[in-house]
Length: 344
Image (tube, rainbow, N blue to C red; front, side, top):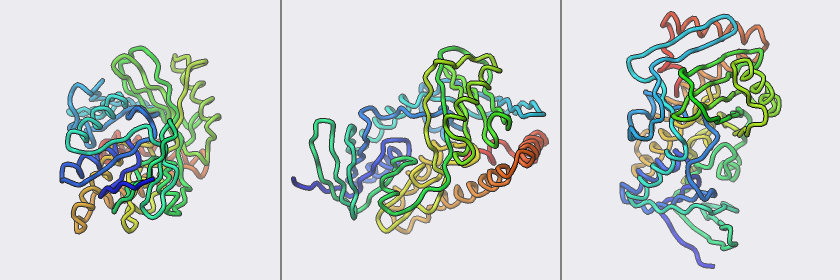
């Protein structure tokens, strides 16, 4: 079996991997992206993108709904946050992934989907497809964009101790408002969401894995949704681990982006924007080793603020309730900017 060579190999075809591949290919770098799924794009996700993140960078036809108002509920408060710009828009992750893949390919990136990576050893990648064909690939730079259970991260020997869980139901229907529910009786220091799309509604919950098992969070989500008028019993749920255990992104020619790096928010679980920002920053760093990648350092600082809130609110139910109510009050009084401080 021969060995192919690429300047850069990216493992993982989510927003982080695709944005990295697109920028590298545009600069003339010989780059290959590998994805184990045959279809790029689908993922367990509420599909929310922010004004300060990604809304302004994608074609209008990909936007399913935009929301200038966010409804925030807690045990004691009911508050609506409004902005002249769309606070959050919803997208279909399949459509987003397909658009990003086409964009990367148009710039010269090589993309192979349907390949399962068996092993990574000193930037040599071994992969197999569903027909049993095996290939070996070598590169100068290896980028792990392969999600919260990243093989590249594991091969680097980097542990993952801080994980969140997201559970999502995508049900047909229409709903007027985008809602966040900080109900610690159901979700502890996590939250439930209602994110309307064009012809469907994302109803889900996010929480820390060390406080809620997936089965418990799912049961509490079903109960809570029932109290909001949504019957989820018997409907298909999808769950995803969310890694927010950031321990660096650059490791002597091997790189981590997005959830593989642990750059998602531990507070909200937001991961699309951090994945794209880190994917592009790593691409720029590969193209120009002197590039400072300050955007990743800024995200890491914001993540630390989010995680302090998570740590304090996880101590006990009283601390959780007090902190969440104070946070909402500060948003209402405009002491905290909802868009800038709570998004990544």
